[in-house]
Image 1 (tube, rainbow, N blue to C red):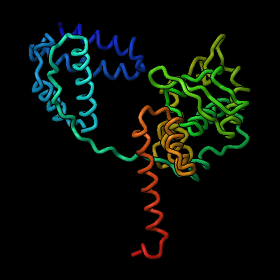
Image 2: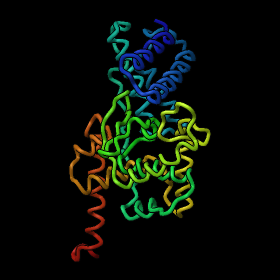
Image 3: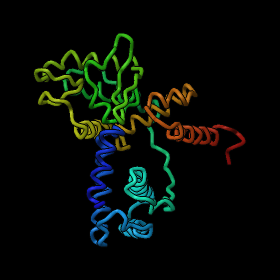
Length: 297
């Protein structure tokens, strides 16, 4: 089978059968199209033309451009997944990359803001500006419930159950989950909803709107949050995932319930959530070094 046709079938499979998120499919598509360009350059137009050393050479070329090990690992993982699919569909009888080793990547600990910084950042009284009310509701909800950026912007009015402090979240892979919403976030959301009608276009269902009355774009949220941090004098680059990381770390530190944190974050594998246990141990060690009389040098 022609490689270009095979890639098209694989992407359709991810979208229609595996129900992968749009951003994930875009990432797979970009990587596989780059691999197609390499294949054409090497006259590897047919799926059966490929061997393990071809993929190794492709990854070496990417490495020579200065790509990090984590990015190379992601590239290799996508290509391996693609060829596994071809074998399952009997398009190939043997997997040419079955022995390909993924580059090892040291996973850095996520950065977080401490509780006092978060409280100071979000504490705003007597806010009159409607857009600032929207922004505060966005930021409070992101921190209160640990939402991803895409989950924030996909939230509809109908997803809210503020009376019971719950939110239905549209997560990765078209999966939904219920998460709790804190009192501060509920107050901020109610404050925004009271002025939302000033912006809303007819029939618009999104909770968070742009000035044009349509669903707010992820880029707008990123920009507004970054500018909000700068105005507050925050040295740390403020972005939505920083609020999510802070939520996870603070929740885990207070509850010591890793499974509950996993459920709130929507992680399929608990090993993804376990990185926050390392983060909390790091904070514990620093506290020990600072406070314990026998730890001081």
